[in-house]
Length: 540
Image (cartoon, rainbow, N blue to C red; front, top):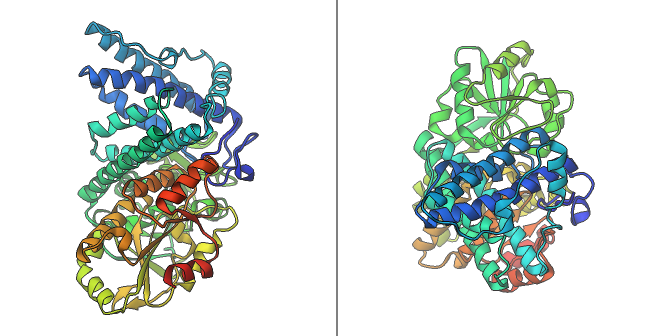
């Protein structure tokens, strides 16, 4: 195996024996093979679309299958043969539709790929179509191809979440097919691939916009909400991941059962949605970021549901953890949404919390609607010199050393500055009491990673109010990355022309020196150094 799609890759270069995430070589090979087959499906789907043939099932499947290969989603090798077979079925169905119109386009050999009939054979095929085996001869083009593929994995996650809530866009699906199919081409130069990487960023903006509309259209705009970090005496269910619909179903199905529902990880912002916070047994938040789950989940006295990515190898709590949707771990019980009866039954069997515990609270719900509702006060505070600078300190958390930088950075941000945050990176400092500036909290939790869309809308609105560009605002982006949604968001920021981003704790292994130099020269991307040095460079 060889995998370097996440930030924690072994030795900073790539996992070649076992994934740091826990991914086995067999699972890695099957995921590589699935991406290989999806490229062929996309090539055919693109030709079919040009002929006026649109297969929504193929569109939705491509997104879901791509998402299943994102880091920490599906570790179960038994789940991939069905996905590979279905990709081929849909590909051949589209070919038949083209033939029915008298069309027989010329496709690459990948569009005729025949998968093996058994798991061992599929694994061997996957080993022949890994990152290194299918590499472009030009290392810089290969770097950008992989950047696009990893960005698409993030795009697919957001499109899937949006589709579950009834929001989708045919052009967005077409964009996924176009970019996946492009990775099969040998006639594109370095400049073409720079353009395709930025196109992936623009596509991700569309995906985040769809998801924002899906979340707010279904559950209302988030409002500032004080969220307990302690627990209530009684039975308990913990919901992790990112999926709001699954959380809603759990809340509906546990009404009147005496079970309290808690969020974990990136589900924390769900407490700000009016359509979810109305449930009286939706109590609070348990635990911190994804990489701490083995210790925190082992201590949780109830059932646990993983709705999207971020699962780690379950330990003693394996009988208590359930996966749903695309999530999988060998030996973990898998349930199909919306029937969460087995999760509830297990929660009722387990002891739950023996007593109430008050561990303080945090406030969530500062998405774009809430922040722009006080925009006038924010603008006046800036004009009056009360707010000197804004920092967006956001992104993924992880276990790799160096992430304490973000805690120290936020702690050292001067008292006349405001920190906006989103995604699980906030768990490095989410419970810090930073006070306020004239009633405006100094720490504003904008939401999940996809709520980068909200942060972009806030920045755009402020730039409009001050009649300047976003790059001219007193705003600095200090980001942390771990998996491929962060790659997609970074591409979105670059597509918008946003510069001076500080990125850490380490830079992606899939970026070659030449590609990195391009980003430095054109976007002034720079690695984080030390909190003191970076604050001095930003604030003077």
